Length: 141
Image (tube, rainbow, N blue to C red; front, side, top):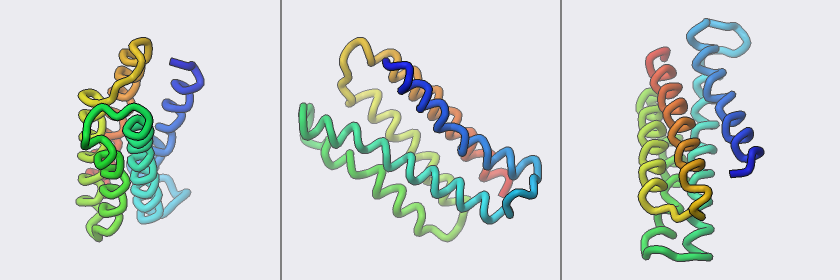
């Protein structure tokens, strides 16, 4: 796995870590509402991103009949979660969606053998941290 992909993956955690810390430490850079909105929007954008690899694979190397449909689910789930007006429910839906796309990736994503272990390990670490950050946000609201 290219080192730049790993670096970018882990750098993508910065907003996920920043907003819960901001809320828990009661920093005054943003209001609580601004932090909640920014975190939720970032989570939805990142969730949408995960459908892209399935979209590409379904078009270039179709493995099953449902992959193209599943490629759209992260974006739809992210968008629908933004329509929920209770922030705790929104954060919970996003958290579960991140977990579900990880599980789908693990079972259906077909990567070259040299990438499987590195990608799966990285996604498991990243998604675990993302879910913990969602739970911290839910707790701090």
